[in-house]
Length: 349
Ligand code: PEP
Ligand code: MN
Image (tube, rainbow, N blue to C red; front, side, top):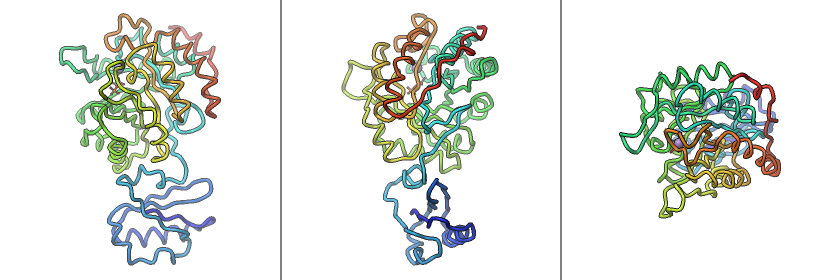
């Protein structure tokens, strides 16, 4: 249930409304927007049926949220949520670009990638240290050594790092190095993991499961949020269909649907959606046009030799070209991109 308060409500009135709701055993979440404050109430709403909420001073209207997700529902927040990563906010006007290799393979390749993608306007560096691989015989990442390399490159370049956590047992370790905890498509419904990352305040990049509905996706976000972590960035990365021409089917419509359903930032990963390098740029443009708040792009200095996902990784020059070509799409969508920075470009690698 959502209580929309009157403009100019006093703190005492707000506290009183919350006390009345909490006295009935529900939890309250206050969201202060530019123009209005809403109080989200979570719990057994039946208990509020006999409370004359609209007659409490300061209450303007009361709405039931019919969706199974509450904290993630659009109505629960007065304004779109912004999730701060390093120097930028995902969910604001800037298009947030995260770029880097599928897997951290060593410090030289990561440093070179970071300085080039940062110079081109990416705001965060991605790279897997613990990799979910379909075959147990494939390279599964450098583990903690990969995390150490990410932290070192963050120190050298100033770029925040995004890396995947696959298991509840790794959360503490990964969180001791990473700025953003990625929960991958295969783990979108690992409820124990979602709850564990929910206990931290570290931003969570939650990828859509390849066979999950938008509702499942938002309920997964709800798991994280219900533990107290509001910093969730949703990432669409294509879903599995009968189509075999692409690695996944990029269901672009999920972006505007999510933007209607939730206040959380929504970014797109065209690399995993397409699975093939030439498709990454057109899907990136389409995602921006559809309203994405950001992009995650796989970039490798030598895709031919990548240990994973080389066929969908852009090389450093291709990434520069993508960022340049994105600008008109970003500005048509009312988004900004940072200017390519000579400072980062000239950093020694
Ligand atoms: C990844 O981003 O490296 C990854 C494994 O993606 P997904 O979970 O979307 O398959
Ligand atoms: Mn990958």
